[in-house]
Amino acid sequence: MWKKTIWIALGIILLGAGAAISQSVEPIRYDTPIVRIKDVARVQGVRDNQIYGLGLVVGLQGTGDGSGSRANVQMIANMLENFGISVSPGDLRMRNIAAVMVTADLPTSLRVGDRIDVTVSSIGDARSLQGGFLLQTPLQAANGQVFAVAQGPVSLGGSAGRSGSGSQGSHATVGVVPGGAIVERELEYRSLAADGTVSMVLLDPDFTTAQRLVEVVNAVYGANAARARDQSTVEIEVPVGYLGNVVAFIAELEELPIRPDTNARVVVNERTGTVVMGSQVRISPVMVSHGGLKVQVGQGENMAAFGGDGRLFGEAMGPGQTYGTTTLLGGMPSVQDLVDALNAVGATPRDIIAILQAVKAAGALFGELIII
Image (cartoon, rainbow, N blue to C red; front, side):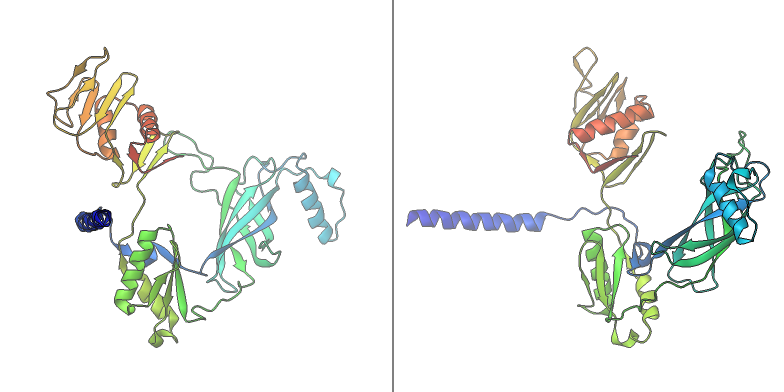
């Protein structure tokens, strides 16, 4: 009997402790800006489609493909054949023409007759497409159907051919034909809210953001108007008054305010030495020693760091102060505090990147470290 009493008592104590913990824990809030729903989500089904085609750029000043580019030579021979001119590919020697791949993105909102920009990229040994003219090129989708036809002068940008100290030269074998493609076939029409619901897809899937989107929509259109299907998709019922005007409902929906949540993340570019971090990233107590640089992250006003000869020093130093090549950080600082401390002791961008990688490997960096 007494054993049961003890277990019951322990159960009551644990339940009480659990209730106390649940009441004392507060969610950590950061200064995330409030944005519109349309800035963090898109309507499912509204998307772009990729189209492409193989074409010829003519009118080049000796900067086109050489005789070794068989694609160019064969395409020219085929084109002449269509005009009733028979010529052997081996007899063609033209440096004023280049074979190119033409690509574009076709939105679902475009209709027959609308124009879109196309990108022209050389597939041969052409040196430059500057001054060239793209001949009529059919653009097809992955299913083989032609959706647009492109033609027009190729533009390389204002800095084409220049690479001085004051300007950066553009890539001479890739250009753009602004408004060069005319839509000839519309994408398959999909009725919005055909089943009475609209699905919003988060651009950056996140469970917290999805739940906040549900709460915002339910606060405006009713308690059960929205539900999160997963971390990226939120299904919203179209109100009865908007069934005949779904566009107006989506327009109102996209303007609703929301506070998105983001993962704690540090992005490092090794090539340029650039470090980009969010305010959510925190670092736990850790001692960093990289060459002659030392940074200690800890708690309390009296922290000690190891010197180069193994002795302890800095007991009188407070958090955030610098002594020689050693910096002490108190509390649970952010990555920004650590980077500032490393800059204070003379660390180079390469040193900072190496130290961040080591801190992450030690499990002291609470966030995602992305190296590009």
